[in-house]
Structures are given as structure tokens and as C-alpha cells.
Image 1: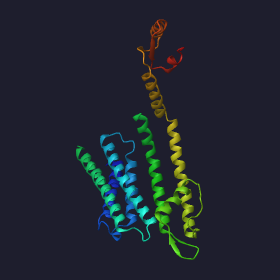
Image 2 (image 1 turned 180 degrees about the vertical axis):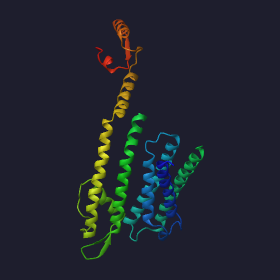
Image 3 (image 1 turned 180 degrees about the horizontal axis):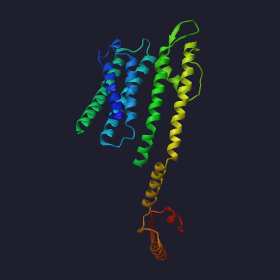
Image 4 (image 1 turned 90 degrees about the vertical axis):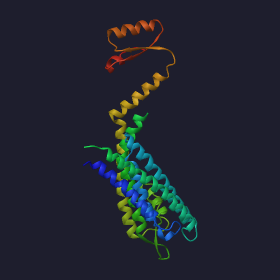
Length: 127
Length: 164
């Protein structure tokens, strides 16, 4: 058992599941999506990116790229949330909620890709 | 370039993860702790304000307690955050300075500088491997003919004794 691999797999799967938890629900219904979940997904996704910093393997660089995509989308979602919550009168409306959730959906695809890459890499290891 | 880049990234991994975690926890808890505004109403910090506050607190800029004066509970948490975030920053800056003094990092830097200076030579040159007696003689001869040479030697003492 490799401790570093456990930590990385933990964070990458946590990022996926948190993001999925935020993503599920009606696309434009603000009551179905909580900001804390988006925040957690963003932080875990950032940690995933940092864990792959300086990894020179082919797998490492591909996962770094895909988790950077996820970070970018989640940061964009957080910025849209901030913009619509602080400038709007009655909090986040359904139109901006829809764009926030679709941005997080994009990040979800990137997270999913990272996990798929992880599975492929793991299955290639022979005892 | 990529050698130096990867070395820096690898070294920054742990301090950056620590910083992100500290900031995340500090921001998260700030949004949970109730505050009291001037009229006595309970209010909760938004994530944006919390992140803004934690950012200037972590770097000890200190713009004060915004948007309202803090409650005691908030102040207690800020107290904890100040010590944790300052330690995290010290660790991050310390490992960055440590990297600058690292032998492998310096070698990568000087190797890069050497590569660049060779790439700049646009005239044909001779490459002399080993600056012993023979190498020195050949170098002298070539220099008299007005030809450029590059000398490579394992021993840095030898190459540093060359007169240019």
C-alpha cells in the first residue's frame, strides 16, 4: 500500500463526490444547491491540483491538467455566485443559479475524467 | 527550464496545500460564527466577506473588523486564525528560501545559464573535453588562430583557472 496514492485517490474521489452532490437537483432551483458544497468542492479540487504539482509522470501531468480545468470552472461558478448574490436584491436568482450549476457540471466532467485516469493507471500496475 | 519549473512546483506542494487548507478552514468557520451589528441584529458573514477578511488577516495587513465590529466569538476565532495563518506563511516562505539554497536547484539554474550562453554563440567553435595539459595546449593553439573554444571538465577547479 502506498500512502501517497491513498491520499491522492481520497482527494480526487472526494472532489468528484462533493461536486456531484452540489450538481444534483433541479438546475435552476437555488434551494437544491448549497454554497457550502460548492466551497468544499472547490477547496478539495484545489488540493487535488496541488497534490499533482511537480509530478513528471505522464499520468500526473494529465490529471494535473484535468484538475486545473475543474478548478477553473469551480472558481468561475463561485465568482458568478458572488456576483449574483452581492449585486442582486433577493439573493441568487434561477438564471444565475443555472449558470453556476452548469459550470459545476463542467467541472464534474473534468473530475470524472481524473478518476477514470486514476482507475486506468491503477489497473496497469501488475504485481 | 522544465527542470527548474518542476523542482519549484514540487517544493511548493506541501506549503501551498497547507495554505489552501488554512485559508479554507478559516473562511469556512468565519461564515458560521454569528456576529451582532450596531442595531443588535444577528448577522453572518458572507463567503466573500469572510475570504476578504481572512486574506488581509493572513498577510497581517489588518484593515479592521468589517462590515461591523466583531462579536467576542468572532474575535476568538480570528485570534486562532492569526497564529495559524502566520505560521503557514512563515513555513511557505521558509521552504521557498530553502529551495533557493538547495544544491540541486542551484545546479539546475547554472546549467540553464550555461546552456543559454552556449546557444548565444553564433560562430563555429571547438569543444574541448577535459582541461588537462593537452586540453590547455590545444586551447592555446586554437586561441592563437582566433578560433572559439568551449571547455568541459569534471573538475570545476580546472575550468575556473582558465584565463579568458
